[in-house]
Image (cartoon, rainbow, N blue to C red):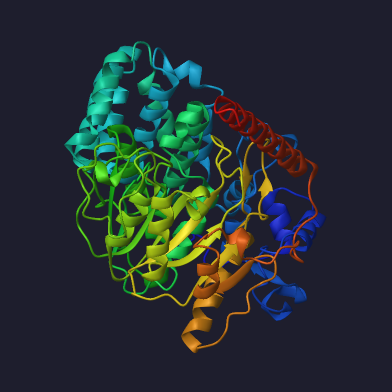
Length: 557
């Protein structure tokens, strides 16, 4: 719950607390559909002035980063208008921890990390934020030692104490990484770092979770393409978590079989808890001690300290993945297009063996067979899985459709991932019903906007729009009505039409073409990105033609 529940503010208050001119607030209201609505008529406020819920305004401002040319001298990069608003109202979430984390991981990182690599230094920072937010007694012990031994040479002892705290919080397998780091600290100023984090004063767990996410974003930027092993983009996280939580009454278990850094599982537990008032049992599997440690910390900071995380694999058939069945909800972003080498687990191949060169349908079948009787799942897949002409994949796809395991497919915009340009589709799956009458297709590939040269994001109202298509479709089915769809965005397609298309499941094949009425004019950056993508496709086509010509020439054709 927000610190400002029940507090009302006028437009003038919003401007003053956010540090902007009064017309800026009116401009926000006019330009952004998701700006909070007034909490009531003029009668709710003094002097016939409309008022707004401070909690709603804060949540909206927290998503708006202050541009560099508008930041104050004491505001680090990444400061939001919500940080200003919160500080002005004097809440416990002052943003001090966020500012300190930004300093320690940004401009002043070189000063504090000593001989640690940037990745190892960020790992220490992430762990410190976790212990400070979730283990107050352990944090006090670490702080006492930091004050007793202020010299840089006390770093090894402090990190060993930190590793011991992580063991108590997450289990023995999670402390190994930190123990290894303790040997390489050199001149790292761990004690100074701990004292600076503590000097931020009382901070609630939500701000700790926010700080942890900021640090993971820094880690992602640092790791570049390797970050794909760790992180799912925020836009995809929001879509998948809200879809699996929708209608989530009675959800007792949520599972992610490729948990990465826990971002999907944490968001899903938050969304389910918001719907039904309590956290479900959370389980997951991952590859590598580092991602599993990050996932455990991330989940604990989101209020899920008892999550059971274990070792998994890059393909379910390789073994190690949990054999437990009957999950109420599953969501995952598995590694794309991995090889299926020497499978040891075949029990989940309900619809047939996937091709050896690609584990996409290994994952999809695994998820279906792990769902309970009323279970549902959201799986992020590369676009190719929806229309691959490989005989094995087409056969599995057809069998999944006919068995009623496929509920909907949602095409997301390109460039959600900073590390790859691959396009992705959300597969909404359910426990097989044995029959299929129709499937919902949503083509959201035209939504979103570029926030950098290489990354696109979905605005909150766009995520809600995707969710509304699914809700409207399920409501129509429950009432026995025909779902009309939305031109340019969604359509419910009968099974007969899907059979005619040879079980191709790409939303672009079924959603009526044309620019939706609410679509924004194309931005120059968007057009440049599309032109680059088209050039790449043309080059690939030329290469393919040349290869075919060469092959035919060998046979004198």
